[in-house]
Amino acid sequence: MNIILVWILQKLADFLQDILFCGCNYPFEGDNYLIDLGVTFGFIKEANGTVAIANRIFETKLYDLFLSEMVMDNTLGKLMTEEKQEYRRSCVMGNIYWK
Image (cartoon, rainbow, N blue to C red; front, top):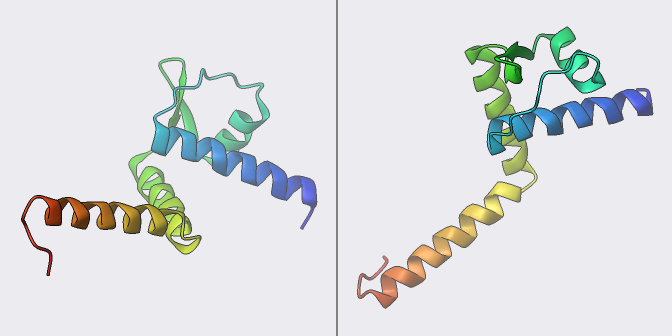
């Protein structure tokens, strides 16, 4: 696959993750190559002058895809493990014993 195409698709994925996970509001500018690409693929649309995910199905599928990639990369797994360990420590300190 063309290296430039891979780079552009990765930038689009990062852009979509910012919208889904961070709640970023980007102004809709059709001349922006990422916005144009997202519209071309049907992933995004214009809503009140800002970029929005095109529909609930794409929103759910993209969210699940990115979430599973994070788990596979162990990004989310590490966070969940750290939070679980912190919860266990707080339970022991609070005289609630973890089994």
